[in-house]
Length: 507
Image (cartoon, one colour):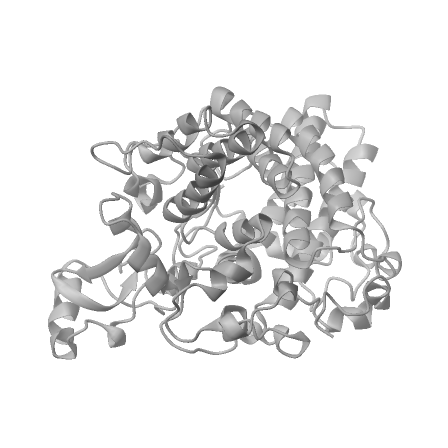
């Protein structure tokens, strides 16, 4: 999908769905152009579905650090090297109704909420048009429905993770009805979503063509099901679905950990789903948050000119924001003999000691092919190592560690030379080993905070983590496992407060 098509998608979304307004609930999309005048061919349905992917590239979701802000910030792996802007509340646990709308100059929670619901709104339109269409072949309908159901499910997955109980609807409702919807139990929504994901898994392809590599496959639906099963502590289904992926998918672990993240090795065999970005077309700047800025480096400021010259000779540059870097706690605890350490932690570069540690697997120093603010690096969403670790976790919870070692040790094989397989653990000590192994393997990849929440240990971990800029231990409360709904949403839909007048405990 790396093509010109992205240049017209946003425009067409505005025409077809009304997407792109200040709030998707402020305008009735049927008043713009009737969707029935558009959805008349397979190509038009494909374009509409590409539009759903395009919303995922928004800065509030995967284009910048929208979702990263909630899934990584405030955990125990990455944090800023300085106090900065309005992002601080998510790190310091001072988030509230009064500041959530100002996070990152408006590119935070309000747009995150709105864009996830824009995906749902638009997906429901596509699904209704599929039901009414009499032109498409049955196999086309099956595939389009499966892909749309997945993308809608993915939106509800994030909404329930971040806000818990939220409005839930699966019909193409008018805006006037959407504005009256109450919040529904997150568990009820997840159960419904699992049914949709099974339909998606059954209808999606096992692989896609080289022109459509960022489109989801059946294995993407499968891994999202595993994640929801783990949240529900449905260990049997989580284990079985993870093994289904391991035993049947074409995805495998790469021999070299660093190559998983190489921007010249996108869509490799380990990565199950990547959000596709293209330089000069739909560029991202999430990379800049992990890339150093030269004014901070090196540790000896008198060597800054030398470092700059050395970088320039390689067509490289420290031109990022340097705002997402490994915490002291992560640096100090990461095993020194783990081969993943230098890919997750850099404390020197070109022979110069750095003032701060950085996460090289996320940065891009290339000034020719990936300049600041114009990166084409794909965003890895799901990969095979995650599946193995989830299989190990579920098996341990079901039956203890005896049959779980094979899955965690498969991931550890490339992490140590010689191998250091785990053995002789109790069920509880294996559980704690999973806590650490997911930390070392998946650091910075948007899994950590949700892992800590579903394990029930977020508060304890935060209170015992060494932070750089501030210590949020005295601020974090049980309510912080969820976010407050942005208060402007209550103006559009007062029913959001009916079931919970406290707004997740924030008022």
